Amino acid sequence: MIRTLGRPQKLTISDDTPPARRHLAETLPAFLLPGQTFSGIAKTAYTSTATVSRTFRAQQVPHWNLLESITDYLGDRYEADEDVPFPTREQWYKL
Figure 1 (cartoon, rainbow, N blue to C red):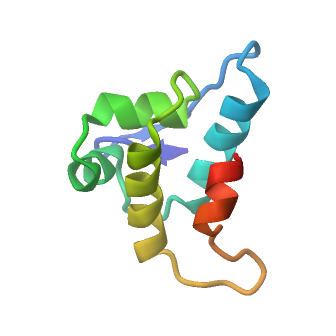
Figure 2: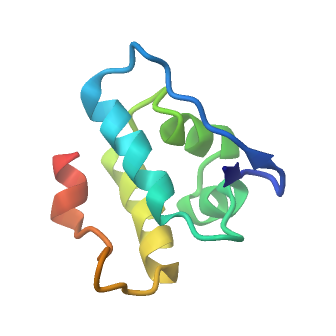
């Protein structure tokens, strides 16, 4: 479940989604913490909530500057965990 505008929403990824987009869309939500919303991400990334939502649902591939803004937002709020470290910028680029 993902919270978009304060309401829980189950994200669906189409079966015919290309592998790279699917991998990104499956990876991003893993680092979305409780209380983080698409609208909060959109404000810090200077984009629309719809654009963030499309990225998380694998309906679009974000520009690098948008991906960096999203991952900066998630990374700034993510507390390091030894089992699941937050991906480095290079790892995001490989997705």
